[in-house]
Image (cartoon, rainbow, N blue to C red; front, side, top):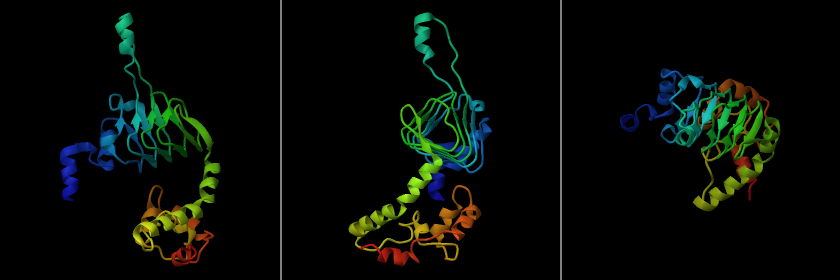
Length: 232
């Protein structure tokens, strides 16, 4: 509580995600439910034209993200031609979107539903639904379904590497927290979930949707202990 009060004193409405989202709504920005801005003090969301930005539900905005609704490039043109030329454009981020660290979204861009934007991307054109996109400029890399299959295929290998590195570093077995993203390898709907795993299930879009899938999960190991014992 003391730390929160100190952050609030120094950073005001950017002290945390909830405070910043509330502030953006107050100034006229349309922001949906379950929107997380992980590092408000390190993000730049254009507040000069808040009515031009629309953010949907279940959107994750990570550290260093910039969202712009205007440009100041006309200053150079004014220096040469004398005219003041306006520069503005709306930004719409639809539902269930992840925006990777240090990405920039320029004016006039719409990002579709169910989209992953990779880190350090420059989004200067519309991104369709159900894709993974990245790069400078940002381009569609693959469909969300293909990415799901790719990530599904490497779960065991990545979890195994995590365990081995953890053992090397600490000289002991990893705990539930260390494996908080890999518990589906050895958990199904019949198993008791520890608190950290329950929090993972409730994050982003809620517990019940994930639990319905977990009930039919074909786990690879009977338990976390069996999984750890399988790794030499």
